Image (cartoon, rainbow, N blue to C red; front, top):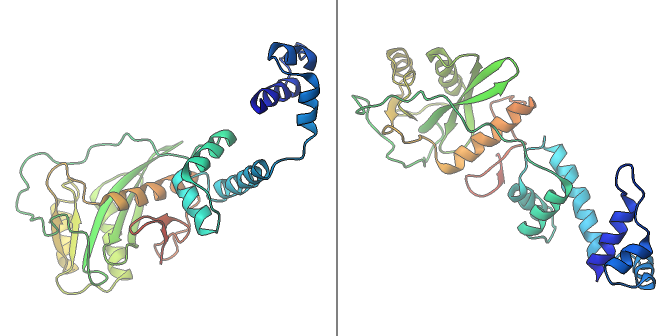
Length: 274
């Protein structure tokens, strides 16, 4: 019955363009409800549940725009729960849908930079083990692509496996070897690299170039690559990279020391960057 009353109220409040709204008495007759019952329903005070939903909507909308329209319902749910709200994921998703909130997403298409064929002389020193005991001991790198009005912007990242921090990054309008060289050079400045440090990547042509190998040798870093078609990053760091990309699309990253402390990355659950 409440749904019928809500429908009548909504239709009366939003009449068709260039046409009067149907009379309440007409709509009550069409939906087989009493006019007195409708007016009694409309005069009731707002229920506690409805009031809570409206308050949640206000919080969700504020958080969504405060985080540059990048939060989906799962991340929004995690933030609300961390803030003390007792709310389920499905309710958060429903309320975001009602508010018309859709997170900014990077385009899925990307250039292919991966070489085909055998792995060659560069070994795989990581073997899908993306853990490390000390900062700088094991690092992974990749390039992501950001569409802009003036063309593609290429972002090279170096992530430390021990701290899960972005320790090196570089941006340019091309993905040539100097882009990744700049990123690994920044990483070497930000982190004291221990003996036997490893840098792991995919088999992109710039990562396997002689110029990049020379740079790693100069930093005393051992090079490691995965098999063709195997992404060097774990699923969690891919989601983190996606978060960074969405924020870059919005033009709102403040890198500072190579970290974005506002992005909640997902290596060990939705934890803020240390």
